[in-house]
Amino acid sequence: MNKNAVKKYSKMITATFIIPLIVYLVMMAVCGGNGILFNIFSYDSFSTIMKSAAYMAIVALGIGFQLKYGRFDFSGGAIIVVSATIGGVLCDVTGLGIWFLLLSSVVVGMLLSFINSFIYVSIRIPVSVCSLAIAYLFEAIPGIVLNGKTGPNILYRDTYTSLGLFPLILLPLAIAVIIYFVYGRFTVAGRQSTLLRENQLASVNIGINEKKNTIITYLISGLLFGLAGAIYATQNELKTITTPLETAGTLFSNIIPSLVGLFLSRYIDDSLGTFVGAFTISTLYYGLDLVGVQGGAKTLSYALFLAVFIFISGFWDQIIMYIKYYFRSLIGKFKKTNVENG
Image 1 (tube, one colour):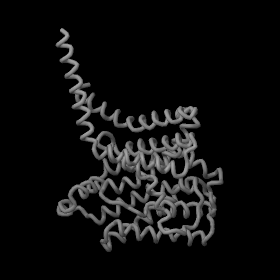
Image 2: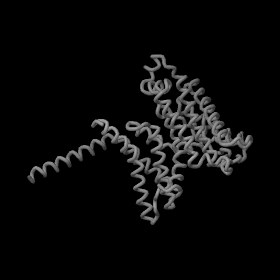
Image 3: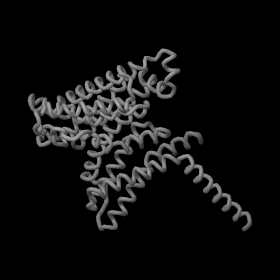
Protein backbone atom coordinates (compact mmCIF):
# COMPACT_ATOMS: atom_id res chain seq x y z
CA MET A 1 0.00 0.00 0.00
CA ASN A 2 1.50 3.33 -1.10
CA LYS A 3 1.92 6.42 1.02
CA ASN A 4 -1.09 8.26 -0.43
CA ALA A 5 -3.40 5.31 0.23
CA VAL A 6 -2.18 5.07 3.83
CA LYS A 7 -2.77 8.80 4.28
CA LYS A 8 -6.26 8.55 2.75
CA TYR A 9 -7.40 5.63 4.91
CA SER A 10 -5.84 7.16 8.01
CA LYS A 11 -7.98 10.26 7.46
CA MET A 12 -11.09 8.12 6.91
CA ILE A 13 -10.56 6.12 10.11
CA THR A 14 -9.75 9.22 12.15
CA ALA A 15 -12.79 11.11 10.82
CA THR A 16 -15.08 8.14 11.50
CA PHE A 17 -14.09 7.59 15.10
CA ILE A 18 -12.85 10.92 16.47
CA ILE A 19 -16.26 12.48 17.26
CA PRO A 20 -17.86 9.45 19.00
CA LEU A 21 -14.56 8.75 20.79
CA ILE A 22 -14.40 12.27 22.25
CA VAL A 23 -18.02 12.07 23.42
CA TYR A 24 -17.41 8.59 24.87
CA LEU A 25 -14.37 9.77 26.85
CA VAL A 26 -16.22 12.86 28.12
CA MET A 27 -19.24 10.83 29.24
CA MET A 28 -17.02 8.18 30.81
CA ALA A 29 -15.34 10.93 32.85
CA VAL A 30 -18.68 12.52 33.81
CA CYS A 31 -20.18 9.18 34.85
CA GLY A 32 -16.98 8.16 36.64
CA GLY A 33 -17.05 11.41 38.59
CA ASN A 34 -20.52 10.46 39.80
CA GLY A 35 -19.47 6.91 40.70
CA ILE A 36 -21.27 5.33 37.73
CA LEU A 37 -19.72 2.85 35.32
CA PHE A 38 -20.14 4.01 31.72
CA ASN A 39 -19.84 0.85 29.64
CA ILE A 40 -21.51 1.01 26.23
CA PHE A 41 -20.18 -2.41 25.25
CA SER A 42 -22.57 -4.46 27.38
CA TYR A 43 -25.56 -5.82 25.45
CA ASP A 44 -28.14 -3.80 27.38
CA SER A 45 -26.25 -0.53 26.95
CA PHE A 46 -25.38 -1.13 23.32
CA SER A 47 -28.92 -2.16 22.38
CA THR A 48 -30.33 0.95 24.08
CA ILE A 49 -27.91 3.22 22.25
CA MET A 50 -28.51 1.48 18.92
CA LYS A 51 -32.29 1.71 19.30
CA SER A 52 -32.07 5.48 19.66
CA ALA A 53 -29.30 5.89 17.07
CA ALA A 54 -31.10 3.87 14.38
CA TYR A 55 -34.29 5.95 14.55
CA MET A 56 -32.32 9.19 14.77
CA ALA A 57 -30.19 8.19 11.77
CA ILE A 58 -33.22 7.40 9.58
CA VAL A 59 -34.81 10.78 10.32
CA ALA A 60 -31.45 12.50 9.77
CA LEU A 61 -31.00 10.72 6.43
CA GLY A 62 -34.38 12.10 5.37
CA ILE A 63 -33.26 15.60 6.41
CA GLY A 64 -29.80 15.23 4.91
CA PHE A 65 -31.20 13.93 1.65
CA GLN A 66 -32.81 17.32 1.01
CA LEU A 67 -29.92 19.37 2.47
CA LYS A 68 -27.48 17.49 0.26
CA TYR A 69 -29.27 18.69 -2.85
CA GLY A 70 -29.82 22.27 -1.73
CA ARG A 71 -33.31 22.07 -0.25
CA PHE A 72 -34.94 21.75 3.16
CA ASP A 73 -38.36 20.25 3.87
CA PHE A 74 -39.98 21.68 7.01
CA SER A 75 -42.87 19.24 6.61
CA GLY A 76 -40.65 16.22 7.37
CA GLY A 77 -41.77 15.99 10.99
CA ALA A 78 -45.43 16.13 9.97
CA ILE A 79 -44.85 13.41 7.36
CA ILE A 80 -43.30 11.15 10.01
CA VAL A 81 -46.19 11.63 12.46
CA VAL A 82 -48.93 11.33 9.81
CA SER A 83 -47.42 8.21 8.25
CA ALA A 84 -47.11 6.71 11.75
CA THR A 85 -50.73 7.60 12.56
CA ILE A 86 -52.24 6.22 9.34
CA GLY A 87 -49.98 3.17 9.40
CA GLY A 88 -50.88 2.51 13.05
CA VAL A 89 -54.62 2.86 12.41
CA LEU A 90 -54.46 0.54 9.39
CA CYS A 91 -52.53 -2.05 11.38
CA ASP A 92 -55.04 -1.78 14.22
CA VAL A 93 -57.89 -2.43 11.77
CA THR A 94 -56.26 -5.18 9.72
CA GLY A 95 -53.90 -6.78 12.25
CA LEU A 96 -51.42 -7.50 9.44
CA GLY A 97 -48.31 -6.97 11.55
CA ILE A 98 -44.90 -5.32 11.26
CA TRP A 99 -44.31 -5.63 7.52
CA PHE A 100 -47.65 -4.03 6.72
CA LEU A 101 -46.80 -1.23 9.15
CA LEU A 102 -43.55 -0.60 7.28
CA LEU A 103 -45.22 -0.76 3.88
CA SER A 104 -48.21 1.44 4.76
CA SER A 105 -46.05 4.05 6.50
CA VAL A 106 -43.68 4.25 3.53
CA VAL A 107 -46.55 4.54 1.03
CA VAL A 108 -48.15 7.34 3.08
CA GLY A 109 -44.80 9.12 3.48
CA MET A 110 -44.15 9.02 -0.25
CA LEU A 111 -47.68 10.16 -1.08
CA LEU A 112 -47.44 13.15 1.27
CA SER A 113 -44.03 14.07 -0.12
CA PHE A 114 -45.38 13.84 -3.66
CA ILE A 115 -48.18 16.26 -2.74
CA ASN A 116 -45.59 18.57 -1.17
CA SER A 117 -43.30 18.51 -4.20
CA PHE A 118 -46.15 18.86 -6.72
CA ILE A 119 -47.41 22.00 -4.99
CA TYR A 120 -43.87 23.38 -4.77
CA VAL A 121 -42.98 22.87 -8.46
CA SER A 122 -46.41 24.11 -9.53
CA ILE A 123 -46.54 27.45 -7.75
CA ARG A 124 -42.75 28.03 -7.43
CA ILE A 125 -42.76 29.90 -4.14
CA PRO A 126 -39.66 29.48 -1.91
CA VAL A 127 -39.35 25.90 -0.67
CA SER A 128 -39.16 26.99 2.98
CA VAL A 129 -42.46 28.88 2.75
CA CYS A 130 -44.15 26.09 0.81
CA SER A 131 -43.04 23.30 3.14
CA LEU A 132 -44.07 25.30 6.22
CA ALA A 133 -47.57 25.77 4.81
CA ILE A 134 -47.74 22.10 3.88
CA ALA A 135 -46.64 21.14 7.41
CA TYR A 136 -49.61 23.04 8.84
CA LEU A 137 -51.90 21.23 6.40
CA PHE A 138 -50.50 17.78 7.14
CA GLU A 139 -50.75 18.30 10.91
CA ALA A 140 -54.53 18.42 10.57
CA ILE A 141 -54.63 14.86 9.22
CA PRO A 142 -54.13 12.96 12.52
CA GLY A 143 -57.10 14.80 14.04
CA ILE A 144 -59.26 13.73 11.09
CA VAL A 145 -58.02 10.13 11.08
CA LEU A 146 -58.35 9.74 14.85
CA ASN A 147 -61.58 11.76 15.05
CA GLY A 148 -60.00 14.02 17.65
CA LYS A 149 -59.19 11.10 19.96
CA THR A 150 -56.12 9.13 21.00
CA GLY A 151 -54.95 6.57 18.45
CA PRO A 152 -54.72 2.79 18.73
CA ASN A 153 -51.19 3.17 20.19
CA ILE A 154 -49.64 -0.02 18.85
CA LEU A 155 -46.52 0.70 20.94
CA TYR A 156 -48.22 -1.32 23.70
CA ARG A 157 -48.52 -4.43 21.51
CA ASP A 158 -45.70 -6.95 21.38
CA THR A 159 -46.59 -7.73 17.75
CA TYR A 160 -45.30 -4.30 16.73
CA THR A 161 -42.89 -3.09 19.42
CA SER A 162 -40.09 -5.38 18.20
CA LEU A 163 -39.72 -3.18 15.09
CA GLY A 164 -38.61 -0.30 17.27
CA LEU A 165 -36.19 -2.41 19.31
CA PHE A 166 -32.68 -3.73 18.71
CA PRO A 167 -31.86 -5.72 16.59
CA LEU A 168 -34.93 -5.56 14.27
CA ILE A 169 -34.73 -1.76 14.12
CA LEU A 170 -31.52 -2.23 12.10
CA LEU A 171 -33.65 -3.45 9.17
CA PRO A 172 -35.34 -0.11 8.36
CA LEU A 173 -32.00 1.58 9.09
CA ALA A 174 -30.26 -0.66 6.54
CA ILE A 175 -32.98 0.05 3.96
CA ALA A 176 -32.61 3.80 4.53
CA VAL A 177 -28.80 3.74 4.27
CA ILE A 178 -28.84 1.62 1.09
CA ILE A 179 -31.42 3.86 -0.62
CA TYR A 180 -29.54 7.03 0.39
CA PHE A 181 -26.19 5.62 -0.78
CA VAL A 182 -27.41 4.07 -4.05
CA TYR A 183 -29.38 7.14 -5.13
CA GLY A 184 -26.42 9.48 -4.81
CA ARG A 185 -23.78 7.14 -6.24
CA PHE A 186 -25.43 4.93 -8.84
CA THR A 187 -28.55 6.59 -10.29
CA VAL A 188 -28.94 9.10 -13.12
CA ALA A 189 -31.41 11.10 -11.00
CA GLY A 190 -28.85 11.28 -8.20
CA ARG A 191 -26.14 12.64 -10.48
CA GLN A 192 -28.63 15.12 -11.93
CA SER A 193 -29.54 16.25 -8.41
CA THR A 194 -25.87 16.94 -7.73
CA LEU A 195 -25.51 18.92 -10.95
CA LEU A 196 -28.61 20.98 -10.14
CA ARG A 197 -27.22 21.78 -6.70
CA GLU A 198 -23.86 22.88 -8.08
CA ASN A 199 -25.13 24.90 -11.06
CA GLN A 200 -28.87 25.04 -11.53
CA LEU A 201 -28.90 27.24 -14.65
CA ALA A 202 -26.26 25.25 -16.52
CA SER A 203 -27.94 21.95 -15.59
CA VAL A 204 -31.31 23.11 -16.92
CA ASN A 205 -29.63 24.40 -20.09
CA ILE A 206 -28.13 20.99 -20.85
CA GLY A 207 -31.57 19.39 -20.64
CA ILE A 208 -32.08 18.24 -17.04
CA ASN A 209 -35.74 18.38 -16.05
CA GLU A 210 -35.60 20.20 -12.73
CA LYS A 211 -39.26 19.68 -11.86
CA LYS A 212 -39.06 15.93 -12.44
CA ASN A 213 -35.85 15.68 -10.42
CA THR A 214 -37.37 17.68 -7.55
CA ILE A 215 -40.36 15.33 -7.37
CA ILE A 216 -38.04 12.29 -7.39
CA THR A 217 -35.93 13.62 -4.52
CA TYR A 218 -39.05 14.42 -2.51
CA LEU A 219 -40.37 10.90 -3.10
CA ILE A 220 -37.11 9.42 -1.79
CA SER A 221 -37.09 11.66 1.29
CA GLY A 222 -40.75 10.71 1.82
CA LEU A 223 -39.74 7.06 1.74
CA LEU A 224 -37.10 7.71 4.39
CA PHE A 225 -39.54 9.67 6.55
CA GLY A 226 -42.07 6.84 6.10
CA LEU A 227 -39.54 4.34 7.48
CA ALA A 228 -39.03 6.65 10.45
CA GLY A 229 -42.81 6.89 10.81
CA ALA A 230 -43.15 3.12 11.18
CA ILE A 231 -40.65 3.19 14.05
CA TYR A 232 -42.30 6.28 15.54
CA ALA A 233 -45.59 4.37 15.72
CA THR A 234 -43.95 1.65 17.82
CA GLN A 235 -42.34 4.11 20.27
CA ASN A 236 -44.85 6.95 20.70
CA GLU A 237 -48.50 7.51 21.42
CA LEU A 238 -50.54 8.44 18.36
CA LYS A 239 -52.69 11.47 19.06
CA THR A 240 -54.35 14.52 17.57
CA ILE A 241 -52.02 17.47 16.93
CA THR A 242 -53.35 20.57 18.64
CA THR A 243 -50.45 23.04 18.40
CA PRO A 244 -49.20 24.52 15.11
CA LEU A 245 -45.86 23.02 14.05
CA GLU A 246 -46.00 20.60 16.98
CA THR A 247 -44.23 18.06 14.76
CA ALA A 248 -41.25 20.38 14.15
CA GLY A 249 -39.51 18.92 17.21
CA THR A 250 -39.65 15.47 15.61
CA LEU A 251 -37.61 16.89 12.76
CA PHE A 252 -35.21 19.34 14.39
CA SER A 253 -34.34 17.13 17.38
CA ASN A 254 -32.68 14.78 14.88
CA ILE A 255 -30.93 17.28 12.65
CA ILE A 256 -27.41 17.12 14.13
CA PRO A 257 -26.56 13.69 12.65
CA SER A 258 -27.37 14.98 9.16
CA LEU A 259 -25.02 17.95 9.73
CA VAL A 260 -22.32 15.58 10.96
CA GLY A 261 -22.87 13.37 7.91
CA LEU A 262 -22.53 16.28 5.48
CA PHE A 263 -19.39 17.46 7.30
CA LEU A 264 -17.79 14.00 7.26
CA SER A 265 -18.65 13.53 3.56
CA ARG A 266 -15.22 14.99 2.72
CA TYR A 267 -13.69 11.83 4.23
CA ILE A 268 -16.36 9.10 4.22
CA ASP A 269 -19.76 8.60 2.61
CA ASP A 270 -22.32 10.91 4.22
CA SER A 271 -24.71 8.00 4.89
CA LEU A 272 -22.08 6.46 7.18
CA GLY A 273 -21.26 9.89 8.58
CA THR A 274 -24.92 10.42 9.45
CA PHE A 275 -25.01 7.18 11.41
CA VAL A 276 -21.78 8.18 13.19
CA GLY A 277 -23.49 11.43 14.22
CA ALA A 278 -26.60 9.58 15.39
CA PHE A 279 -24.55 7.07 17.39
CA THR A 280 -22.60 9.93 18.97
CA ILE A 281 -25.73 11.82 20.07
CA SER A 282 -27.33 8.60 21.30
CA THR A 283 -24.20 7.85 23.35
CA LEU A 284 -24.32 11.38 24.78
CA TYR A 285 -27.98 10.96 25.76
CA TYR A 286 -27.34 7.55 27.30
CA GLY A 287 -24.56 8.94 29.46
CA LEU A 288 -26.69 11.90 30.55
CA ASP A 289 -29.53 9.54 31.47
CA LEU A 290 -27.16 7.49 33.62
CA VAL A 291 -26.21 10.52 35.72
CA GLY A 292 -29.82 11.68 35.92
CA VAL A 293 -29.57 14.73 33.66
CA GLN A 294 -33.04 15.48 32.28
CA GLY A 295 -35.18 18.32 30.98
CA GLY A 296 -33.52 21.67 30.38
CA ALA A 297 -30.05 20.44 31.35
CA LYS A 298 -30.25 17.68 28.74
CA THR A 299 -31.40 20.13 26.08
CA LEU A 300 -28.55 22.46 27.07
CA SER A 301 -26.06 19.62 26.61
CA TYR A 302 -27.48 18.95 23.15
CA ALA A 303 -27.23 22.65 22.28
CA LEU A 304 -23.65 22.78 23.59
CA PHE A 305 -22.68 19.84 21.40
CA LEU A 306 -24.29 21.57 18.41
CA ALA A 307 -22.46 24.83 19.12
CA VAL A 308 -19.07 23.12 19.48
CA PHE A 309 -19.66 21.07 16.34
CA ILE A 310 -20.70 24.11 14.29
CA PHE A 311 -17.60 25.99 15.48
CA ILE A 312 -15.25 23.11 14.69
CA SER A 313 -16.81 22.33 11.31
CA GLY A 314 -16.86 26.02 10.38
CA PHE A 315 -13.16 26.49 11.14
CA TRP A 316 -12.05 22.93 10.33
CA ASP A 317 -9.54 23.86 7.62
CA GLN A 318 -7.97 26.54 9.80
CA ILE A 319 -7.81 24.15 12.79
CA ILE A 320 -6.10 21.46 10.69
CA MET A 321 -3.68 24.05 9.30
CA TYR A 322 -2.81 25.22 12.82
CA ILE A 323 -2.32 21.66 14.10
CA LYS A 324 0.00 20.87 11.17
CA TYR A 325 1.95 24.09 11.77
CA TYR A 326 2.21 23.35 15.50
CA PHE A 327 3.55 19.82 15.00
CA ARG A 328 5.97 20.93 12.29
CA SER A 329 7.30 23.58 14.66
CA LEU A 330 7.55 21.01 17.45
CA ILE A 331 9.41 18.56 15.22
CA GLY A 332 11.69 21.37 14.00
CA LYS A 333 12.57 22.35 17.56
CA PHE A 334 13.18 18.69 18.47
CA LYS A 335 15.57 18.22 15.52
CA LYS A 336 17.34 21.47 16.32
CA THR A 337 17.82 20.38 19.93
CA ASN A 338 19.26 17.03 18.83
CA VAL A 339 21.69 18.73 16.48
CA GLU A 340 22.85 21.16 19.18
CA ASN A 341 23.35 18.28 21.64
CA GLY A 342 25.55 16.54 19.25
